Structures are given as C-alpha cells and as structure tokens.
Length: 130
Image 1 (cartoon, rainbow, N blue to C red):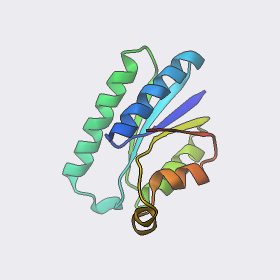
Image 2: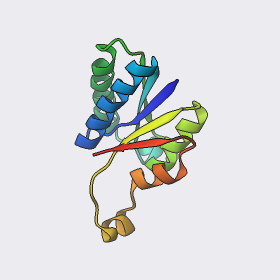
Image 3: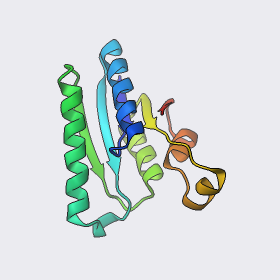
Image 4: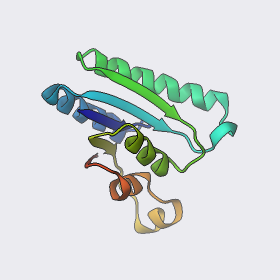
C-alpha cells in the first residue's frame, strides 16, 4: 500500500503526517511525503532548500516509527494541486492525506485551494486533516 502526504510545513500538513503514520503502521504501508512548489525552473534555490529541509524533518519523523518513507520536492511548473494529483497518478498512490485550513468563499475564489483541487481530482481516496 502506498500513502501520500501533501506537505507544506503547515499545522494541517503536520497533522496529516501524523494520521498517515498511524495508517501506515496499521497497513504496513510506504509513505510518500510530497511538496509542490509553483514556478518551475525559476524557483529560487533558497526556497527549494527550505522545502527539502522540511521534507527531511518529516521523513525522519516517519522513519523513527519504523515506516518506509520517500520524499519529493516537485517543481514542474504546474499549480500545486495539479502537481500533487499528477504525482499520485504516476506513483499509483492508494490514499492521500492533506491538511486543510478554513478559507472564506471569497478567499477560495481569489486564491484557489490546493486541498480543494486535490480532493476533487485525486485518483484515490483523500483524507483531510485540520
């Protein structure tokens, strides 16, 4: 079984990571912790390094529990939601975990919602955690 955590260092993502670890232990699953950065090749190296550092900390947290974990920083130039869904399709992910935070309807209209896109377009079940 393959589980995927959409990770961005937020409180919601950290909570999603914890829930995914519980599920991984229960089902002897592998966990992918994935961060998507919008921008493609023009992403500043410092932003990429910060994302890698956050993922390494998440990976250490998972591996200390005896769970196999892989991390991925994705900078394909897609919107983060599209990128995460594409990764899930490519890796045949069985279940996704995404942290959510409350946004007003106007906020979602103006800024969009990565979590909303993932929930609606994912090729597998999505568990949301707040």
